[in-house]
Image (cartoon, rainbow over all chains, first blue to last red; front, side):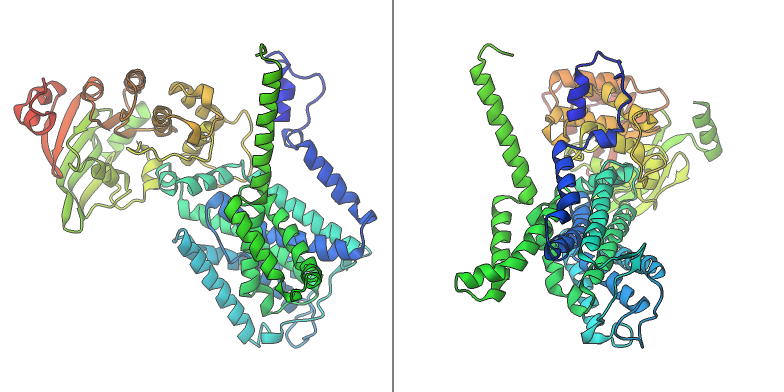
Length: 362
Length: 260
């Protein structure tokens, strides 16, 4: 918008004398630049706990929730399988790379493990999509929840590949370019990079033919078919795209925690991802990251807060649940929706004020 | 034109739409019963009939939204009976819907752009279209054609009913249509909008034929050269507009006693 207003003063057809920045860059609002600068210099002012356990973890959960937001917000498909896709990618890192279980782990180098893990997880996400796209609404939620539960129980009961209940421990994060990537500052920048990349990718794809077609399918699948689009193929492709983001996040997650077990993608975490996406907002790709930060902060500090008022500390889910209820009740499009509405009403009231102070004005 | 003619002769048929013995059952109810219908390439045809006569079901069987229970559907000589809707659209068949089926979360231009993109390559493209993209231009021209150029960047949800009907038409004209099915395009339009609609229909290229379902006789009979009357899922009468208008049986059945 700012770009449009800027060029509005020029006569029609006239080009500004300075070579214009690419539209993509011009369209970034000032607030986003501010957030970017804050995020980049943050490690200078924070401690390692905040970098890895608060922000690093938020970026990772935000990415998994972003993959859900992409499917739900643009495609109208609420998929609960995204955490399982991330979990499988994490498992593949343990199985193909190094872990405390040398009888299972293949000890491949990380640069081979990562792409293979992503491919396997994306295949899983795409096949889940193939099963899910024939359903709609509540049935999509049910079938993806069923796949997620199946994945959880399978990993818990399979000892040959997934090492059953215990899962894998002592997973190393890679070391290259002379950097130990589990060092909090390095890990912070690693997650920041991938979170920004996924966020930018989703924002970019929104306006591509594929992204527009997906939104058309969300609004009206039957009409999209009548326009010549293969609706189910687009939906499956959307699952594949979302699975790439979830898979990368899953790899970062096991590098952060150094372990992966059935509980990583248990029913609890699966629902958490949905809660994160809904709290943040499903309309805009920033929503999942806002939701993830709120979730992680609550999860980390609710214990202290609750014990200080005399409640059992493990009841942090109570706070998350109450927050979820409040959001669903007051702002179905999440915190980001709340913020957008506040800004709009603020702008309206300002416009009214200026109109009142200049009654003769245009 | 030449290529259309060549494709026609290659297909060995002069009919754009050729239905043989088409039936469609909903449970025990025959919405369409043994329909034979031929429409020439470039022909402008109206389908009249009271509510429940099977007009929209007829459209759905031609476009593939429903599959017929029995019978054959040919489009420019090609048997498309079992083709999914998107395959028929890519062969040049278009339709509008009686109830607007638009993308309410997207802008007017995006709606038309999707319609243009649906019948061209690059539907899965992960690259944003450039400003000088041919399909963006085509979409802009179509919004001009239906007088929505001032509203290009509005979301469809903010459009009036009449504007949504006009957008429906723009979507149907996207790409290179060879035959269009209009399902009550004038329903709910103001007299001014109706005049614009008639203008758009009359301005269609002569090789583009259409079938129009329309209750408004003034609109229907001004833009078509032949009329088919349906009743209870069957073809009841067929003739020129003048013949149908003066046909006593049709007047009795459809136009009502007080008409004409």
